[in-house]
Image (cartoon, rainbow, N blue to C red; front, side):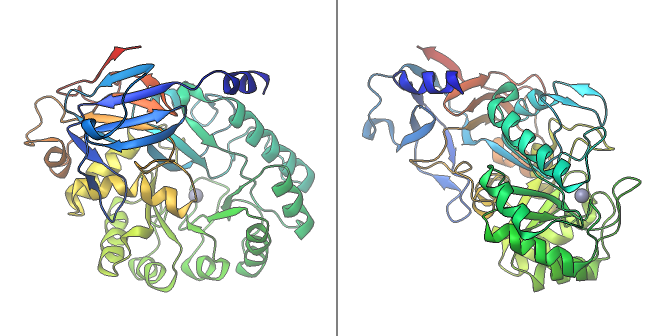
Length: 399
Ligand SMILES: [Zn+2]
């Protein structure tokens, strides 16, 4: 905390990103902006526009985008972090830093459920949630901002527990259904208490993920009425098609599609939401680390898969992983607009892609090449070590 206060007292840095070839806003209502320059003061965007119209003087850092595309830093709506940059699930370290190289600047925990010896008694689960919230607030692996401290509800919790958690800074619940509460009535009551104190909720949807978890069907999801229908395409085992369609039609909550789910069901959920005119509810996550490992490129893979096979324009697919998630989860990132967090991913067509430009390459199913990632106004990665190489790469030209 002490050094954060110190950093705040120093004059804020001014970041100017110029020569942007394509500005992807993250906003479904207007995915492409007619602008080539973004200015950030400290960790917030201060101006977006044509270079001649915005004040670029006095920059402490200038980035020449070299004509590539700029989008909001990607959001992974569904991760299972445990402690620092280590995951016991596959016993890997440095996984979060690797996701930064996949364009992810913000992650939302769906529960620190892989913690070895995870406490399931009420005092223990509250303590673990508060610990995780504090630890990830103070430590950002690679620069990635992680909203963690997501307790999994268990029988025995009372309203006072949710009030206490909220007062301690807990803002999200882990996936409902991963604990002992597996009936809609109890889940609905606890989700209601959480909501009353400003804590957002997510529910596991579909078959059990790993031995020990269990089936949550559409009736339980609808009765619980959590804010986010977590992995509507299963994680991995999906509900039958008619149940997925029913969740799209009969709920207005966020429809989360994950990389670690059933891809055919992902396309069904996407098409159904599109037909209902409710693409704004579709948000993306990886649901990793998990049995399928860590997926540094999981979000860009989802963007390419949904754009290519779900037949949505690439600039729209990018909104699912940025502005949509930010809006459904009340985050201040995910959109290129003054006042928003200054987190960006700069991308270009991957070298030798058959696409004619970045958007066309994604619509053809290729991954973008990431050339730079900026988290809260700080250049956190230059040419990605994980994506295929970008054709053109931005450069820091002045400090
Ligand atoms: Zn799950």
